[in-house]
Length: 152
Image (cartoon, rainbow, N blue to C red; front, side, top):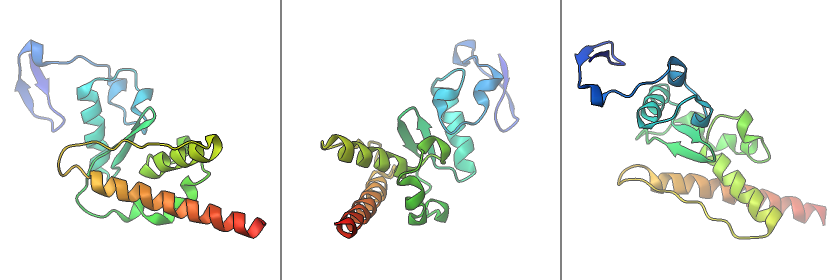
């Protein structure tokens, strides 16, 4: 079968190496659950396209996939914490702060401990992702504590 790669190159591959898809599945999305089809190739295509535009976070339902840019991106800095704290995640770009906000909301409304699972291969950015979520939780917890102290 002759196929055209993302780079425009024509190559010949075996038929069993081709995964059929609809054009609408190649549309980029903040949440991949919204696509008509979802398979490994479509996920990787979407993550690559977003990464090339410095969009390193992508939702897949309630999960966030983070692609390590191996550099600091100011567009994802702590200045966004107030937007994600109390904000509606669906109205904001995907971010680890949304995971932190969901955990914080659940913890405070349910009064139960919460867990955040961060997984990946060596060098994938697990430590950095953990620090980002902990910075968010520290900031919103301290601001909530200050707010409660002022109200008493």
